Image (cartoon, rainbow, N blue to C red; front, side, top):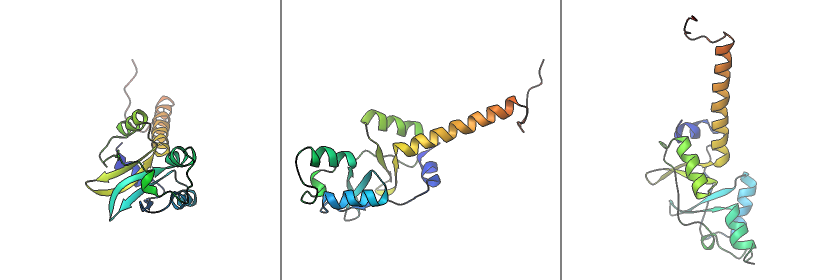
Amino acid sequence: MRVQELLDRKDSQNIYSVSPEASVFEAVTEMVAKNVGAMLVIKNGALVGIITERDYLRLVTVQGRTARDTPVHEVMSRTIVYLTPDTPIDEAMSVMTEKRIRHLPVMDDQTVCGVLSIGDLVKAKAKDHETKIRTLEAYISDDYPGPKTPSA
């Protein structure tokens, strides 16, 4: 399975974003309202960063800043790791695991197509495994509709 297939299956196709000039408080309030753990940071239509719950905890709370007085651009991740629609799901999981990232934008050239979380990937893998298990169970129990090899 590829990333585009997973995006097509997602319940929500919404891409949530915030301006780099917005306060961290505004970004976190939106994350809570939208029930997401990250927001893309968009300036003049271009993706310039991502802000996550972890950024908030690490760079605002721990450093003694206030969320209302800290602009997003001061704490956002500027190095943008992203997926393409053609990226295989297993590769996406590897990237997230190796880089310890829980949210990745999906980009086609300079266009943001969506955002995937580690939860999205785990759900997709679990569903894939469930389908394989059901198919094998049906095969074993003679309910499998496809061809079988005659037994010797």
